[in-house]
Length: 178
Image (cartoon, rainbow, N blue to C red; front, side, top):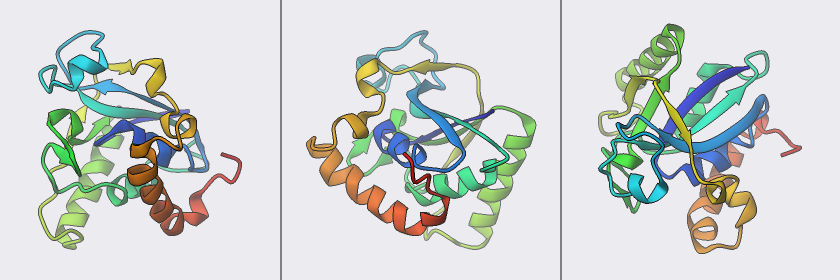
């Protein structure tokens, strides 16, 4: 299994999207990129720990490639807004790819550059591409958040519409059993 670590704003949205892909074997919400060991959600939400809300994704490269994960990454959040996604504001919600090896760094840089050259987005991409160092799983109540809380307000009004759009665009990559 390969590992990818992405931040696209709120990890509840990120987790709900990537859990549906064929070849993804696990998605864990957590924190990465900061200077505080074992941070809590309350600490991370202050924006003072340096961490981003991320998902660590384990995937079978024989079924889905890192490039395909990046396609989903860039198409399911706004990589042009610095330290914010929708109403979530602060460095903990930044767009970030934590690469686990040189090949991932090269692929991420290449795809980001191609998107910029093709003017895929109206504004410049601000996605950070940074070496992975540490991952801290979020508290248990954050794991499988959408699956466990589909009727919660944020899930109904933010995550569900995002998932509906995602499912239409990426229907051929969905795992029908998830």
